[in-house]
Length: 138
Image 1 (cartoon, rainbow, N blue to C red):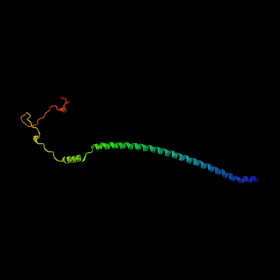
Image 2 (image 1 turned 30 degrees about the vertical axis):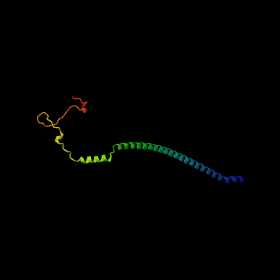
Image 3 (image 1 turned 180 degrees about the horizontal axis):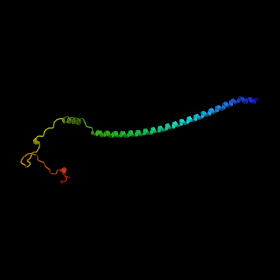
Image 4 (image 1 turned 120 degrees about the horizontal axis):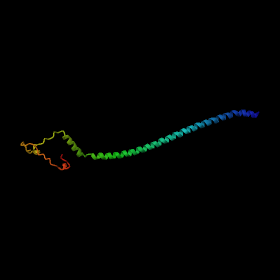
């Protein structure tokens, strides 16, 4: 009889222990699931970090290339830079561009008789010069 009472008294404790074991198993499963999720997140973070490192390396390479091209462009632009005297001459030429051109005097042009009796005109020579050596008459 004592055994029966002891068994009846321990039965609720056994049930309670079984319930606790089930809760521990469920918590362990949840913890496993959480660990898997953390593992997946770490893998994604690793992939993103590798992608960022690759992009940073590519950007660094592009920046270096652009820097080289900028130096080449700077050198090309410096080729066309003028000193202050040349700029002053250009400004003077621009200012004088607004003036009326001077008229040519008649004494600057060689006047000759063209054989028609009028005595007016100029002497035009159509002989071949050095620039016309490859010209062909048709």
